[in-house]
Each structure stands twice: as C-alpha cells, then as structure tokens.
Length: 361
Ligand SMILES: Cc1cc2nc3c(=O)[nH]c(=O)nc-3n(C[C@H](O)[C@H](O)[C@H](O)COP(=O)(O)O)c2cc1C
Image (cartoon, rainbow, N blue to C red; front, side, top):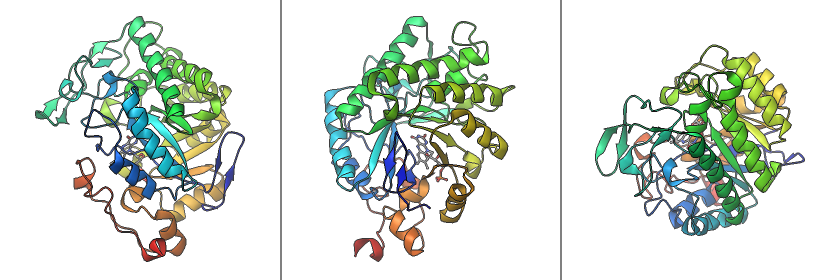
C-alpha cells in the first residue's frame, strides 16, 4: 500500500510515504532558507508528503544554530523556492513550526530575542553554538500570560506566512521537548495557573495554538506532532500521561486537524510507545494518523495493512536516500546516513548522497 495514492477530505497525496521532519542546520544566513535547501527538498520530492525541518515562528524560538525561521519576508521568499521545487514534482509539503523554548542558548538567538519557557528552570546539559562551542542551555524567562498570548500569535502569523510561501500546511511541533511539549509535560511544566497544574491545563497551550492556527488558515492545513513517552530534552513519562494525551487527541480531533503525527523513538533509545495506547490515541483523534520511528519498507507496509496508520514517515532513510521511493520499489539497498554531517553547514552529507541508477534513468 505504500505507493498507492492517499485520499482523504483534508489531504490528497501521490503515495503514503512521508518524509519526517529533520533539522539540518543549513540556514546559514539570517535563518533564511536558501538555494541549497531548495535543492535538498527538491531531491526528496518522491515523498507523498514532506514535513520540513523544525522552523521557528519567532526569533525567540531559534534556539539552535542555523535553523530556519518563518516570521519575515526574506524567509517567506526562501521557503517559496523550496515549495516550488517540491510542488513541481507533485509532492505536498508542510512546514514544521518549532519554537525551541528553553532548548536554547542566547548565542544562537538573533539580537533582541530571548529564551522562554513554562518556568525559569533551565534544561540540564549543554548545547552547541557556532560562536562559543558547547555551552550550558541558557536559563529561560518564565512565560507570563502576555508572553503566552504573544507565542500563540506568533504561531498564527507564521502559519499565515506559510500559506503565502506556498506550503500546503503547517505541522505544529508539540513533540521532542520543544516549547509546546514543555507545557504538555508534567516533568517540565510545574506551573500552577491556567497553563499548568492539571492535565487539562498542561494541554491548554497546544490546544490554544491549534485552535488559533485553524481559525487563521483552515483545519485541513494544520497537522500536529506529539511524542508521549519521549525522553528528549528533559521530558519523560509521568503519572497520567496516557489519559492526558487521549484527552488532547480528542480535542485536536474535534478541531478536524489534517493529521496527528506520532513519534516513537524506541529505535533511538527512548521507551517504546505501547501498541495498545497508539491504537487508543488514533481512535481518540479520529482523523489521519501518521506513524513514525524506526520503520523500514516491510514494517511500514505492515503498519498500513494492519490499519495502525494512514501514512508512514521515514526520517534517516530519507536523509541518506533522496530516491528512497525508487529504491524501495526496486528493492535496492539504502545508503547509510552519516551522523557527522547531520547538522554541519554546506552540501556535504546534505545534497550529495548518491542516487541509484533506477532513479537517474
Ligand atoms: C538529523 C535529525 C534531525 C531531526 N530533527 C527533527 C525535527 O526538527 N523535528 C522533529 O519533529 N523530529 C526531528 N527528528 C526526528 C525524526 O523526525 C524521526 O522521528 C526520527 O529520525 C525517527 O525516525 P527514523 O527511524 O525513520 O529516522 C530528527 C531526526 C534526525 C535524525
């Protein structure tokens, strides 16, 4: 079923294979997408749907070195070249809106921007900066009601710019320990106000952002990614995690979002997301469901035939194989990804992975 077209009210795709969002840190000038990035995404337009790397809706959300943004005209123009390259080959593309929150260092932020989070507690450990090498994460400013309203507004404005840049939609990044999950996760969000202190209150920011974004650009243009049981960036499971995410999925389903994208990083050392819970989450959401994490051709096909997902996402396989569809169709071996060039600037390990003869013919 992998290569069959996908038709749903909100999403029509040439196949069921999604390219998972992957930060690649090639936006070397002013966090704007460039020609190299358009080439990279264009090479991977065999996918039915591409989800871009995490892209900040705000100067405050640019916590990592060289990640792209989507909040000014230069960035819109850069992304337009990307969406054109992808659309020319009949693929769809959503931009992943990622506000890094407290996963940040001030040296990575543009002048005037600040590190923010649900509380003032800094994330333990170090992160890379171009200017000062490895540095401890910067302490965040705890967001007050006004800062929260501003963040919601930034997501909305960025979603509108995404439409202007030619994207088919946005994926709200509520996974992997970035701002929206910093509010969802009870180990990080220790607030005691309207945005913390209970499951409903922890869910509130993600729902506020989803609702406001849907109102701005339409539900068929808004997807969301979540990672219950994820451990990245100081998150981790907590008492009541399943009940909280089921409630979240029901609310997001009521908003008729284009899809729910579930992360399972057990292939990267995180605890597995229990299979029964995945099924419950999918039922609670009720719309298109993307499964991801550690899949290969065979296991992805099995997900689709078992009805455990409507679409399947591959990350590292796409990173290293621009012609992944041709390779999977022909049963050809895959290039191995080179982690030493995942986040380095330039074409090496980015646009120079070899294509198979099947693809170049
Ligand atoms: C280099 C790299 C960068 C990533 N960046 C992001 C990101 O920006 N946003 C996100 O949601 N996931 C990110 N991920 C996670 C992937 O989307 C995916 O969930 C993960 O690689 C597991 O899928 P796989 O086993 O098919 O690679 C990244 C993964 C890799 C390898």
